[in-house]
Length: 417
Image 1 (tube, rainbow, N blue to C red):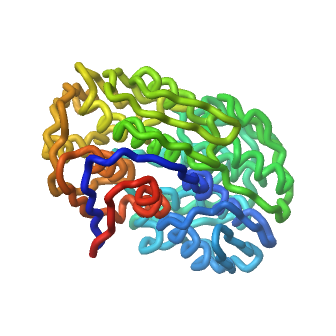
Image 2 (tube, one colour):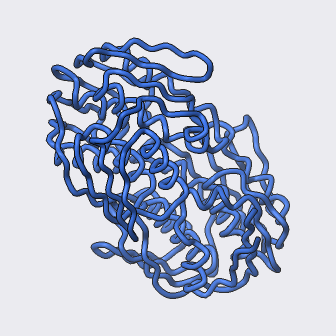
Image 3 (cartoon, rainbow, N blue to C red):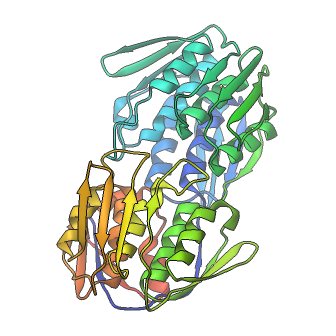
């Protein structure tokens, strides 16, 4: 099992290119199930999660052709409606094939998903939404089964905004008969790019990016070429790394409009930030100011950046507080930061109080989930000594060649077996 070894104390300097967004690519690739033809995706990141969903589609019968940065999917060959446990268990986003399968084929059987251990993240809103669209749902032996001769448009209200729930039901509703309205829908940029792609395929979707999305069902969708948007979480991670190491990084190929909350908080922490059309320069300050954060659905501060900011706050002046309001059980990385000399206390399971310390000390640590792994990498970059991070397969799910990118910025980092 691979490990990452980092010797801290180096300022990150130079330029880095941002990869395509994992969280945008996964639903887009799943949407190819809706199309009886070939779809070509570009700016596709080389990640474990992308491989996982490709293997899942291939198991369903799709033909996939891979080349650097590109993935072509021919959904006309799909002849299976069951997404099996061995393929689904590795990635929670596998649930995204449920809506497209039942919409196109009238029948889907999908294993209950796995993924990072950052809370229950129940799929009940996916299922109640499909029931509202006319599907019959049953759960037996760890599998969700959905059946419908043809889905029928309906009004669906989400008890709370859910990204994958909004994506799943938006895809399902594209082929439903009549109009569907999703209320209290998620508003993330990944929702918008999915709607734009589906419209390019012939769907009729309005309101993506707002709390109310309207979908007028069509009989079929057609092939299209789709480009994946830049990864806003990878962008934010490199921004925090620049601030934490008192570095100077030009982050290229990003979308500044997607990360307003991150930019605002980093400025408050003392970083100097210059914003260009598709790039951001971050210059770290010798003195990091303490700030408070509460994670919220988009456009609020992203939960996927909480762990990275916690690492930054461990070396800030004064005290800071982080309130995790999106997921429970998402402070597991705090215990690893404590091993490195951080002063963190957790109360009620979702509020972290951080007292800044002069420096972190290197230690062997273990990643518990995707974003926790990024927080530990940043901790290793600023810690005194050599840090070894195990279970970095979590990191490989969402960060493309992160150790290579950091090396080009001057980090002393290497992958070990």
